[in-house]
Image (cartoon, rainbow, N blue to C red; front, side, top):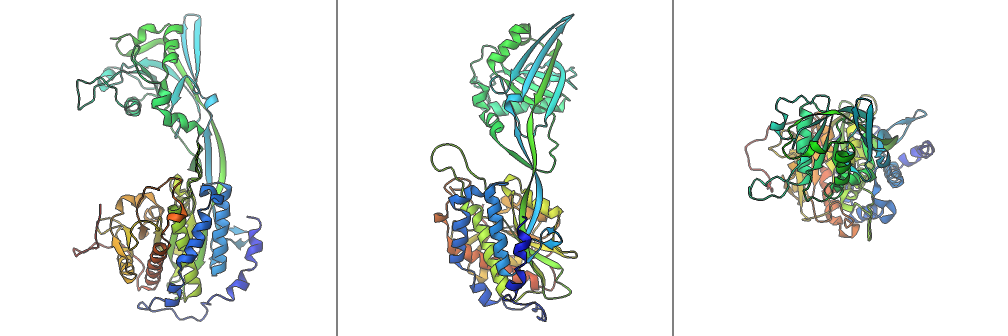
Length: 532
């Protein structure tokens, strides 16, 4: 980051070769798409970008990784070469291409996460301390660090009727997981899936005002260990959790006690009668629970990348058509064989398409409205980069985003089809979608309104939430989605370039239209082909 102002010092030299907007007459609403700029969008160039971004060297471009910083520098350098103005944070008063955002990185500490059960009778006090490594499984996702202590109350199997006339507010729940017949086979004695049973009980206990729940297998029941049936939560202790800013978390722990720990509870603490068949729900005299959850937390910073091509119409230049794509992926896995999630289609393809579109706007005439290019990180962790940017826009003062064109996974499946959302049936349908369909037709691409179910799964949703008209280009899922096999040798570079040309046409049209993009009510006319 410190070296970037030095690089920016070369901007005037590069801008000498870029088309100047000074004295350029704003294009009219019907101005033809600049063919030379359109033709500059090359499958070969996209292949070059993707080959680098999705290489093993980049190790899956995980959020906050050293490789994602390399990718950001690569994008910023390409914006510099295209002649885009930096539109990110200021460093010593000089604008950069980087817009930083804070992330909280947390990792649960299994060895320091423990459950202490205490029985006090008269002057006698007995305790047993259990550890998450071997004695129980807890759900670490979203759990706030700290300590909770409360009296213990038994609620049988934790069904609704077990809470009748029972006040559990401010108490820890102890519930038994007994084999339950499947709804479609009343004669079967098989238990429901462990996760379903656990969360059914936990959600009910929380709704009754309890502060946490401990679930155990019924004595004598033949059931696999919770470390097996709830392995996802066990593995959660090995994962780094990423969130925006300070994470409030929940103070309701959900705990599944392994059978040996359950037996210690009943034997050493003298609670054998609690789990006997037929025991009625009620408080467990003199029994209390203390749960301690430990979490290592770091506040770190990641970067979005943004550049701007100012518009040529003084009355419209402050209105910005924003292109976006996420450049992060999911990093690497564990185990044997290839464990690098290269993310070629997801989303080196959209990232590379935007690089070509930026180059085209850099070499061609400028439209009336301004054009900006935004690459965001943290999409795979919950649209983090775009969520932050939409709340902290770094464009120059007076500029505002009036439309967003988002590209995520555009290099696979049918070479002449592309999914588009929002559809005419979607509440966010806008003139931008209508213009996108026209741009597709001009490039011989069939527009499919088959992507509404993905509307909230990509970065355009962050801008739609601000009332900004959006359109999302998406070529669909495939067998390599979020797998190490999403390699660049499977990409259709011709298709990616074709969709990039569609998006360039769309941006040019929207940036020169008499009015900025706006929501519309779909007419009852024939629409492009729709697939489920």
